[in-house]
Every structure is written in structure tokens, then in C-alpha cells.
Image 1 (cartoon, rainbow, N blue to C red):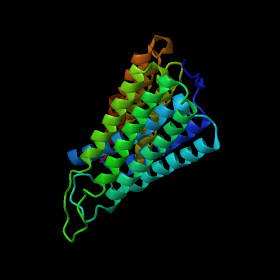
Image 2: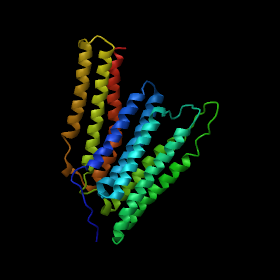
Image 3: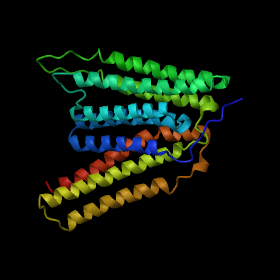
Image 4: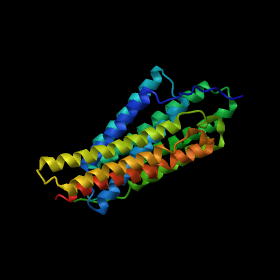
Length: 304
């Protein structure tokens, strides 16, 4: 006997509202960080990694178990707060560089810890209401345990950063954030693949990932429009070369859109393939944001 979870055919307004926090963070961080060397590139990838996996972990819960209740709305408010925490950290995101104070990095560890504790609470409520179904106990407990371990590690890492000093120091503790984020995601995916009772069959996971892809493509349009505004504002010559670059940039985004969405058919995805397909969106999305940022920089670089 298995529980009949309520499935949403489409993304809820709460999920879409949460996506706005994701795109706001991405837009703000992209505007603040100029990618002009390898350190800036690695910093951008690292921030996007943590942002994406935090969004992904929350979405994995939402598409399967989210319901409209006071508790869920409170948890969603906490998830919004976590995204605001990303916005606070973004302007001073300098991993691997020598800095005088690691206070914001320590605070960020606690932010990641809180996000996982919120997920533990949400999965715990789901476990409470499905306790009489034995087949759901072990997989839900395993997911909760993975988040508990991740939360403890995130919190412990805050003490591993160097103390404030009068001379700048470097630290590679932040690398553990990436390892933990990938590890917990792999474990959550593996559990749902093995125990089909909490799989993503019948959910709108495919729609959630496609919507995020659309948002990232939209971010590309935003950065290209900013590049156009930069050219116009500084009164650079708007000749045929510039026009060709802008047209080419828009066509790149349009062709990417067609390549992705024209071949997207939900009926072709099995239970396991669907989860693997969703997980590999991380390298796809990081490639897209870097490509689109590079296209925008190329347009402005030609005018510098």
C-alpha cells in the first residue's frame, strides 16, 4: 500500500514566486561580477553552483510533496529568506582570494545550514502524515538524514574559516560547500530512483526545469539589452558591425530556445530518466549563463 500524493499538473504560484528570487540573485550577481580572468570565472561558477543546488533541492520537495498550508507557507518564507541571504553575500563573493574578514563566509555557512533544516522540517511533516505507509518511511528518513548531515557540515564549516586579521589571508574551506551540495543532491536522486514510492512520476519536474531554462535564457536577453544600453549611453558608433553582433546574439538565444524546447516531450521520460535528465540541467544551465555572458561581453568589448 502506497500513499496517493497530490500532484500538481503545473507549477504553483508559490514556486514561480520562488523562481523570481533565483533570477533576481542571478541578475544582480552577474551585474556585480565582471568575468575578466580565471578567478572571476571560478567565483561565478561557484556561486551559481550553490544557488542552483539550493533552488534544486527546494524544487525536488515542492514538485512531490508541497501542499497549501500555513506550515508550508512559513517554510516557503524561510526559503525566500535564504535567497535574500544569497543576495547579501553576492557583492562580496571572493572565494579563494585573500581577504581580511571571513564573517560573511561564516554567515553564508549558516544560511546554507538553515535552508537544509527547513527541508528537514518539510520532509518530517510529510513523514508524519505518511507514517502508516511502511514503504515511505525508510526513503524519507534517508533523505532527512542526508540533509541533517549536510546541515551539520555546513554549520561546522563556519568555524573552519580563518579568524579576522590585520593581514589578508586565503582559505579553501569554501570548496567543501560544493562537495556537500553535489553529494546531497546525488543521494536524494538515488533514493528516489530506488524507492519509486517517492519518485517524480506524475509530477511537473520537467516543467520546473524547462521554466528555469527559459528564465536563464531570459537573463541572457537582459544582459544583451544592457550591453546595447551601454553602447548607446556612451555614444559609441552604432555601425553595421555592432548591429551584426547584436543580431547574432539574439539569434544565438533564439536557436538555443528552439533546440531545447522543440524536442521537449514529457511522454518520452521514464521515472529514472526523468531524474537524470533533471540533474544534468546543472551543467547545461552553467554553460548557458557563461555563453550568454560571453556573448554580451563580446558586444561591449568590441566598443572598448
